[in-house]
Image 1 (cartoon, rainbow over the protein chains, first blue to last red):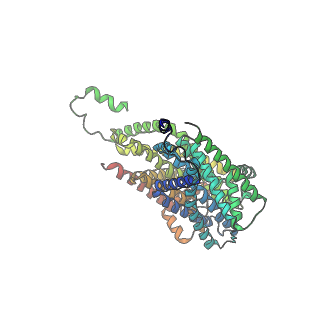
Image 2 (image 1 turned 180 degrees about the vertical axis):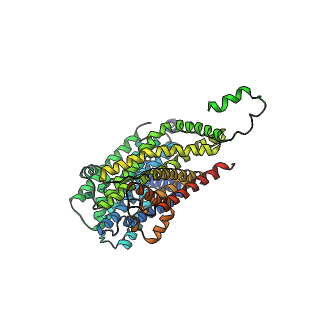
Image 3 (image 1 turned 90 degrees about the horizontal axis):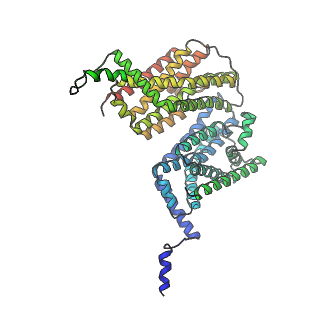
Length: 265
Length: 270
């Protein structure tokens, strides 16, 4: 009977727990963690997101004496894409950079929670903050321009994948780049690139050919293609290619996150 | 700095406070010079980056506006090209200067600088001059990029020199006053981001003001951004800009307001 005491001394209490119940419980905890740590911010971010989306939708008409329907349609279906990616791609890495500076980054890594759970909880938060802004922007666009929108069921995978790809790329950026200053510079440059140098808010034909080709390799053009297709009820080979490229980007980003979280600092 | 300290230290009685309060134009100029050297030394490691960011933002926006139009008519090209210097000056004054102030406030630089035996007006004037000088290369480069991209024909007039200088000084003083007058860094940050948004979309910098609804035009008449675009456009073209004198007045008023806000913060004890 004396041997029974030995394992209790050497094995840490509880051991490693696995299984769906544990996973679900952790997911709930991490979601609460994210929501609580951002509680002051989430409402502000959601409101700023909606306001900037509406601002863009309305402001673009000032660029033209009479805005063509196609231009209005492109902006109105592009703004939701920007709404979807800004929290995950831009605020996410900045938040991680902030956590690194504040020291809570190391603390979070010591929590007995699977990394996939933390990532998924963060994805949920990103989605929850951006979807209301998407709806508001689209509603205002519809009221202002009376657009020919035909929202197809494909909007669900389009929104989910666009947000997932952006969140995972942002997550990879935040975790793989260890210098907070560099993270901030890269994210600022990304905002600029997404607004101006990716064919999200305007047709790809309006940018020089070489820039369009460069954009093929980046995810933003494809995010716009899949979301716009779902909002206008169109399809085609570009849409399937878009899903494929976004999938590849997501997998690559998840791999990079796994690599940077898995190695010891 | 040496000129300020050495002469007195050798002869003064160690117990007595050093002389009476020094003032006068010569002293002010010497302080200004010393503070300018101090600021220059401090900003040296950032200067290149500031210029690069400014060029990227200014030139980047010039290119980016072109992508939004299905056809770039000669009129649109002219408006975008003549808006370029304004686009380069606004981020410097409204983003980079407030950010620099935020960092200085967090680092405690202000308390140190204010403790120096130099008039605070000379300290502020030195910062204004430094950022104005830093603003110019990026502005010129943004204009060159615009000329290359849109190949428009501009007719430069002497008004351009005072116009660009006043715009740069205005942007710097307003950014400086704004960042000093509002004590909460978060509020400054939010305000700056909102401003950039308003400026880039809702200000008639790269498009004619006639495209604005009436009430928005009235708002823009009070804000400095349309005035900046107007005076610079008056220096680059003939006949495109109207109400140039009024715009100069508006810019002057904003510069004075920025200086007053700075003077109010810098002048009081805390």
